[in-house]
Amino acid sequence: MVETEGKYANVNGMKMYYEVSGKGDPLIVLHGAYMNIISMGEIIPKLARTHQVYALELQGHGRTTDIDRPITYPNLADDVAAFMDAVGLKKVNVFGYSMGGVTGLQLAIRYPEKVSRLIVASVAYDLEGWQPEFKNFIPQMNVEMFLNLPFAEEYRKLAPDPDGFPALAEKLIALEKEPMAWEEDVKNLKTPVLIIAGDADVVTLEHTIVMFRLLGGGVMGDMDKPLPDSRLAIMPATSHTAVIIQPDLLIAFIEPFLKGETPKGFIE
Image (cartoon, rainbow, N blue to C red):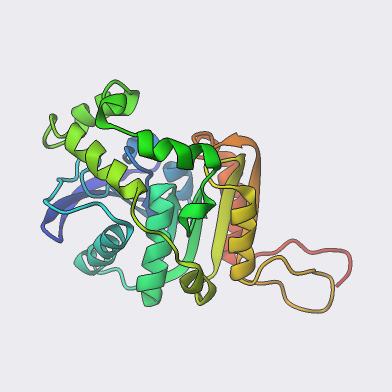
């Protein structure tokens, strides 16, 4: 069993909770909206078998305090960068799911010198990348519809302010309406990226493929040219919330990517 140590770091006016586990190259793990380290499930201990994992709880989530500031992807990315400075991490691999994945993408865009390799699960780089059903749902979102969901109860168990969930929900609803149009930024990334998505995810398959092509992917192999550094993995029969509960499949995608390993075809 991998030992875990929970700590706090002072980051941009908040007390950010994080846990360190495992040994090896440092790997930061970023959770999704309304989530925390616990709700990320088994992927963290599995990653900690071969990496020193720094699992963070982002602004207002889990045991991390909230501050008087909107939750935006640039803000969250700045927090991760400040966290790295606070704990002495110069350059790391990053794995982010959903909100954490988009945060990781912004981290690589804003601080490319801090990210060795990036794994993003269930992400878009443009608001147009979300499924039509989700885009239509965003204007209907209100705080009340989230108050009785399971993650609201989980929030009350961990949060420094157990009554702070409505304020968090309000900020996360506003986050869904924040501008996102980062095509040029993605195209200019030099960081190798592994994109993971479910085939029934909140992001469309078409958008995911365009993102992969922006990163240099989608070429033909077996033609005496090296494969691109970035990769794409689609999880079958998988909705958005089912992505993170398949840790064995995630590990099968993540570990070869982090090691730079590629399957060898019979044409060499």
